[in-house]
Structure formats: C-alpha cells, structure tokens
Length: 431
Length: 93
Figure 1: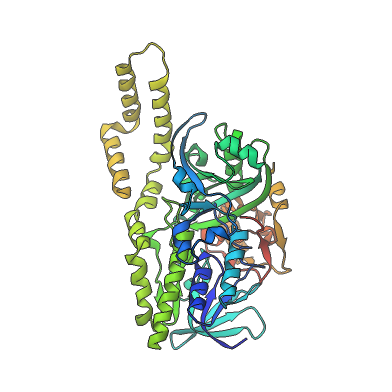
Figure 2: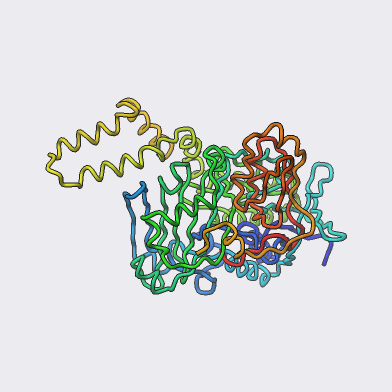
C-alpha cells in the first residue's frame, strides 16, 4: 500500500462510496476506509433510495444493484387512537424505467456499491477506525487509524463518517449536535411472504409502497413512523427528535411496540417475524445546522454535513450528490495542484447552489417550529380525525350544524386567532 | 414477533470488544446532578442501568447510534467508536 493517496475517504456509506467511485473512475488514487466488518455493517436507513442521484454515478444501476421494490405508491397516514385520515399518490409510471425510488436493505446495497468502487480501482480497507485527522500547519494532510503504523496521507481527506462525525467536530467544523438536531429512530425488518405483502398493500411482485405515519404513531411527539415494503419483508420504524424523546420520557423500542400494535397498523404486520432490530440517528437540524463544509485539505459530505431533508425523507440521495461533488472538486483541484480551502470552496458553493442547499433552505425553520409548537402533531391530527368522523357519520344532524360543530372544535382550544396563527406559521415554514 | 428488547437484541449480531467504547466520566454527576437519568430511558438498547451509586454500562449491546453522547445533559459520557470491525454488525437494513 502506498503511503500517500490522492484522496482518503472516511466511511463507505452512500456519500463516501460515491466520492471514492467518482474519484477513482477519473484516475485518482483513492483509499476508502470503513470501520465496519464490511461496508453497510454499521449503516441504517428506513429504506428509500432515490434513483436520480445514484444514476448520475452508475447509469442504469437498477439492472444490477441489490434493490427491493420500486415504490409506486406513497401513502401518508394521520393517525388517531383508533382512526386515521389518509392521503396517497399511486403512479404506475414509477414502476417502470427510469423509476423514482426503491426500497433497499442497506447492508446489502452498501456492500454492492463499495464493490463497484473497488472495480474502479479504489483501495477499500474494512475494520479500521480513523481516530483523528493528521493536521500540519492547519492543513489536513492525512488520517490516523487504529491499525499499527496506521498513519496514511493524502492530498484531500473526505469525511463521510456519518451523523456521528467525531472527525468534523474535532476539527472544529461544528459543535456537538444538540438533541433537537438529531432524530433517534428505531426499526425492525420483519419477514412476510411476498404474496402476503402484495395482497395487504395491493401491489404486484415488482411494485412497492411507502407509508409515512404522523400523529398517534409518535404519541404526538415530533417525528414519524413508517412502513416500507421490501421483496419479502417489511421495514417498520419510528423516530422522533432526540429532544422530544427525552422530554416525553419515551423508550424508543416501546414506542415501536406501540406502533406495531396500533389497530391501524397491526393488520399489515400480522404474522410477520422480526429478522433484525436497528437503531440510528438521523441528522435533522437542516439548513441552519450545516457545519463548515471545507477546510485546507478536507471536505465534509453526507450525514456528517447534516445533508438531510427530513420533510421529504431525502438523505442518501443528498449524500451521493455531495460525495460525487466532492470528487469532482478534488479533480479540479488536482489540475490546479492546490488543495487549499480557497480552491476546495467550490464544493461548498456547489452544495448551497444545488437542490440540497435550496431545499434545506426552504424548510430551514420547519423542524424547529414544529418542535416549539407541538400542537400540530398533538392536537390538530386528532381534531382532523374527529372532523372527518363528525362529517361522515349520519346521525340526523344537518351538515351545516356539523360544520359549525367542527369549526367550534378547532377554535375551542386555541381561539380563532390562535388557529389562524397556527395555519399561517405552518404555511410559512413549508411554503 | 420480537416484543421485548431482549428478544429484539437477540436477533442482532455483535462482535464484542473486551473494552468498553463508552465511558461514564463521573458517576457522582449521575448520582447528584441528574435525577432523571435520561440515558437509562432513551437508549434504544438499554445500555445504561443505574445501580444506586454508579451507572452500569452494558456496551456489548450498543447500536452505536450516538444518542447518549448528545443526550446526556452533563456531557458526562465519553463516546468513541469500537475498535475496527468490532461492535454491532447489521446484516440487513
């Protein structure tokens, strides 16, 4: 192994592997360091992988990659104790090329993706923790690992070490995340025969469904539960901001049991057998939590850079885009023969000018606002459920009287002005 | 169906190290300053258990999520990654 590489990438998740793949494909000498037994061994997500950003790295990857099902229907459930109001979109075009998104199992997908990077010439070493960046005169020149004689050098170090980026923190790129900047999520992969999944979700073998569940699924806390269909298993999970979890004194696995036993959800997993239980943090601080992205000889990507759109459950696609952009930036820097913060800064501007910067800016106040004003999840979801019940139950009451009753139910707690303010506030943070 | 945490954890593969990657820095802080001991509640694997005078750390079942490091109100938990290859090994998602 040569002592010096063009690029060292820390972490073989979507961001790191995208960077390593792109850099090696364009002729750079790349070392990809993974702390797990294999790429994917430490990596968790609910399970939705968007096609677009992956395709920009490996065209037509769906012909080869280990994917579960292309999602043809996205459902949204607003849950009360024993009722729900739902909305959804189903489009068969999503089940055909070029597809929109797929359910995936990350341990399988990440392993495959890293193997494609190795085919491009990337040197992958597993079971290795990067303990610190080697900094000389303020310039990151390499990494120290937990292997004997484990110092390795490179022109640029790319931090793709995930939500717990101790490396970016130790470089002073950000302070420790606050509990409201991360969501603690737990999930189970549950085995269910393909045929049963197809019947319960009204799909065929090569069609998948995603369900995002709000309201009682988090017992009113800021967060969501989800159900995603794999080929012959279902991912079911729930997460809230760590701050909500702490404030409400909830045990995440008990909340997951609550979700699994909810009368609106339980029939979907009836008879399913749990294969694996997983916990992970999702960086959900959004735009205002994006750390310093670039320094002399170093770039931060993916979850480590808080590049997650919690409202639209996009994360791995942003990780891939950021990893690829990091590689392209390094390729340009290589031509110039300079790897200073000034030269690498086009990565930062590229992130902020892309859909990532724009989307995260659009929702920059959403998480914070919904956290500060818990009524959206705690009060309005039950109110909407009761409104539907009132309107659709035929009990001899005239519809005008029903409408009046519904309006009164909404204003009883918060007043007309309060409701108007709530509506305006919600519109403002998502507009 | 795995309903208890024990049943859930039994399904997960762990390649345990002999040394803990999690360290409670000062057990007196837990005893005197932290009546709620939030880490014993929100940890998804019940790694932390209060034993009356000190915090027991069952690092072997840790999912390495990082919640305890961020959620400890007194920054009293030193959190490192387990040695390369050790710790949790997810097989599926």
